[in-house]
Length: 80
Image (tube, rainbow, N blue to C red; front, top):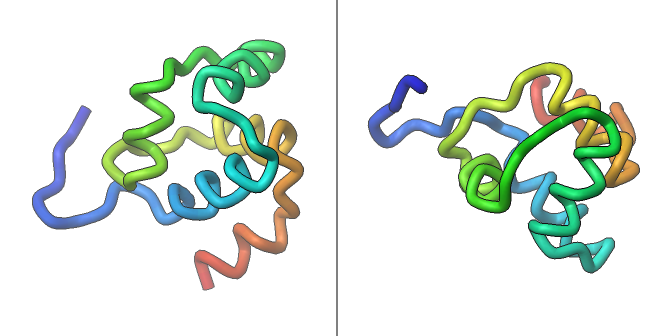
């Protein structure tokens, strides 16, 4: 994976953390829910995504939205 100095690798991380905490899910439980959608991430990767240190693939983003019930409009607001 490519490393970026002082730059975030994604803009979705803080939103994912917010929704995960709202649902009172641990990172491990989030991993288990994502596995039901054939998305295999471990808790360390979830932390790196939430901290903006890891790139999120498009299919992972869709899985996060489904599992955490994130409206697509929230994501749209982040990229505008």
